[in-house]
Image (spheres, rainbow, N blue to C red):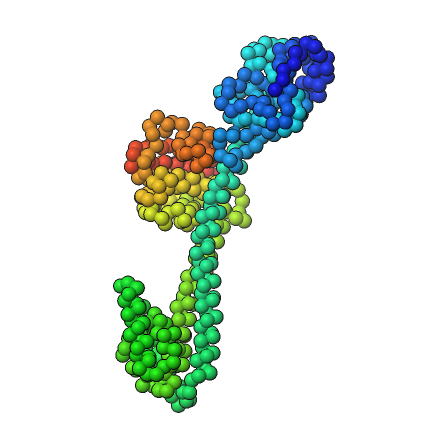
Length: 473
């Protein structure tokens, strides 16, 4: 960036400064003093105007141009802040900013003024109305940044959940597709068997009775290993070949899967006679179709359960505040997060009986459970014991989420609820999850605490019961 002495064209700078909304209406003398204290800077596209990690020594007034700022050492999908002509940024009066948290680069040729923080005390004396407006800007900035952080954290959480749900839904949907393809193959075999059978009408009734006897007595096959399965298929194939059944190698696997015994085969052969091949094919195919129907029912039920869990998790079609069943919310969250839990985490539930409902935003509470459970899974590296306990403590519902992971270092426990603080590696955490959790709990009048030693980390969330009682009156 290039710096220009302001004394050479104060009147020009004054005219531009008066186009900035917060400076409009201020007295000429005060604004000329303001300009005299500033550094005038010009930045070409791509040039850095402010760098993260530096001390916030200046309040920046964008006279012309545009700057985009983001945390370049943070997550790649972090929020981007745009500062355009007429905006004021950097260090504002009464801000508690300790270090600049973003790097700002000029997007187009930019012209700006930098007012030193060291002159804030004098600014308060000379331009008190300007200071009042700048405090309003500070309030707006805090509100906007907080909203952006919350939105980013929600999107990050949604991304994790979406990936997990896609994985969970993929398994039953893939099973359903396989089952549909297997049913088509079964129908082809049934048609082929119907064309080749020679069994007469007199034998149909007896054959049906024999099939029902065998079907009722059949039990699921339990082979010790794949070799045992292959041996059984080969034995059935040899038996079929001894009966001159064509393509015995095609029929033997389905009969082995159905767990036909030698006695079953002999009983069936006595009734089927010369049509043994096609009738066994028909019977084995019908048994296979029963198994496929069970698989389809299980797969579709799993998909329905997940969709139901999604609706309950998000409190779809419900108002922002409702009576929330804590236990149900925890169970819904566990269902949604099954993709992380099933890898090697044992869930222990210690739920209190007759736990009262609380008046709250159900989807936000589920976001709390999601963040805490997700952090616990990460702390255990996907393998350990997750304990969830609920209880009533005086006027509060207590939810305790504990894990036996590595724990939180003692020197950082007091900071884990601070914005942007994370114990995870670069790119693994935003440092916003627990900050969001803390804000949600505070908004409902509750509080959250944590204790941690290696092998035992416990987050305790207390939510007031009384709010639900007031809502009912």
